Image (cartoon, rainbow, N blue to C red; front, top):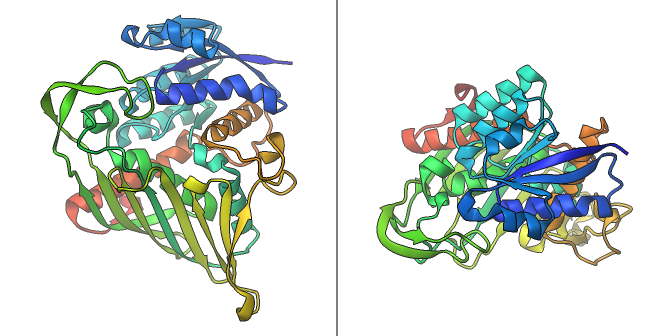
Length: 393
């Protein structure tokens, strides 16, 4: 069986998720290509050697440029902060590597455009980790839409709400525009824009009514490196620094099939730990998904007699009917967050072997379209007007 040496750039929250996926994928999926966890890159202060030893990487490095140029490497997996997506991705493509990149594809629209153009020019194989496409319930929702179960979709409501970013959280890179590009918008709205594009099979054509707000204007400058999740293990060191990204962004949109939509992303929506979801209303039925109950999909069949119409909860854990779960556990033996990454690793390996993925993977061109929507929302908020997507190149 063929194998491919993988290099991971980044040892934070996403680095852990990706490492777990590369380490697990061959145990649960019949991989047409065997991934070899060859090298992980991290800054010296991040102790990449310890990370490598813990997660099963053969080598550790502190020079990403040498890593992406290494002729032994076949796939470069970029899991660095957003501002550091474009340089290594471009260098890796120019070195003839396949590239997997975290979302959003870049910190700025210009970087995203350049990455997509480079991929197109070099005919590079690229992948973007919009992992929620790989939730069985989300992939099944797309299947139901394709089968016509909803009829014509008229309404799309999408939200991604978290509450971790209160006043006690210091000035992490996620709160600084130079590193993150944007705040809740790029971090959270990116996911639900991609997810609704994926499930509906339609494109967003116009954005309007956008509101962006930063509630906490300053945060304590942090000391030490993060050791847990998004913000765990990080304490303030002293002094204050300005927050230069949004805490929340809301906007309205139109889809190419005629549906109207609303999107909301927030990091201080108290009581919402990771409420990532959508509702679609069509002429024949509706669907609802909430990642906090990720194994479930709610379905309303409006073609039934009115007296028996009602929301039903589908447990998307039956391997014969629901995507991916046949490779995991028996019915209702639930899967979790990390499984979406492993599911995607499996699809990446299929594509590298010349096989179709179970469901489509966004490449750089696809992820650039999501970035255009994000940019249109920021322009709408700044200029207080509707923005046609054709204006955002």
